[in-house]
Length: 104
Image (cartoon, rainbow, N blue to C red; front, top):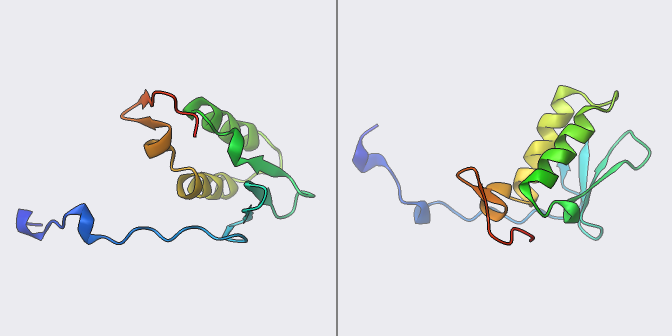
């Protein structure tokens, strides 16, 4: 790759907003409630509104990963959904530092 091949960030389109019902593996986004609902667990939900700090995001990931029904792929899909919906690196922490007043 040459330096002249690098495109500025403005050349890339903005990501499309995630719509209600979007599926991330076994997780389905419910926009009205702002939750991710697991498909086969009788309505098991991850509350996105409770992800107000990087620590809260990490707590959810580890909490769900300890469930006996949760596979490594389920965790990967959960992390991808959190990245797409919460965008923690931009909204909660950058460069390993919590954003001031990181409550979204």
